[in-house]
Figure 1 (cartoon, rainbow, N blue to C red):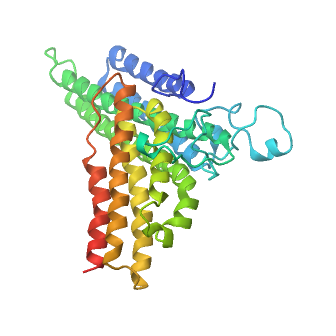
Figure 2 (cartoon, helix red, strand yellow):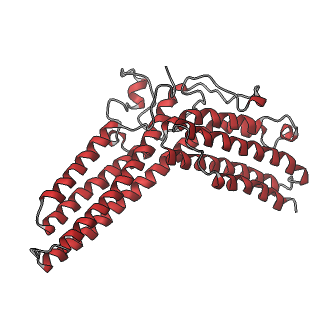
Figure 3 (tube, rainbow, N blue to C red):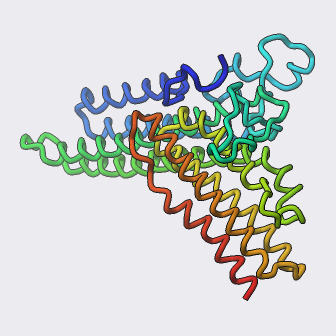
Length: 349
């Protein structure tokens, strides 16, 4: 069956873990078996280059510049041209993972549930490209994996620093001052190299989450462009933002299973920040035309209240998936949403 059913979090790729494990295994050997601090330091720096190459592979994957070097393998990523020419294999997204496409809130082929029982008539947007679920899953893999590698890399900095400390505290004084000085230089270089890899892992995780949010936001573009701030938007029964909330909730019911807890928290902040930017940008455009008046505050407040409810709902999904853990703090997201009210209040003064 499609969807998150039967899928265990975290969603991680196998191949890059094997590569990273090989690097870590070699690092253990260096620190445990190489007696010369200078040689151990040089070797550790050589391994740190492997950390960077691994991080760069993820960057290239998400940027879509060289997917064949990414963690999913040649068999999983076929070019669009091969698919168009009937090159065989399962149908799926093209080689460039960043390619924007019409995705579906029902991409995981599960029943679409309305947001909150009181809004039973409101369902999420359903478009015609369910195969984009594979693209969503790949972004989840990248975000989860990069988070794991970032933590592992930080761990190795601590281990190498601890090893340097043990060399310096050696009671047998078998190491010369020159030898230890070279080791200190190597450890400093190691920290710089691994720090660079950590920065790349963090950046790539953020990039993957932005791409993930963009795919979801793209499904709401039509309803927002058709109804937001238009004549029907002022009516009490306008379902524009309620539909957006339903779409967010539908996606998050699966993504909460796929993403690690802290990654899911960052994803939600990215998702709602993207929506707030769209909302306030369009609101400002209407304000510059001289259209925003005090009468706008009521429907804006209605929209923000719906979004607050949506935040509460989707934040609780990951806690439930993690075995009943409490929902994470949503104050940063709520503050972002509250900025909409502040913005419209300034406009009508």
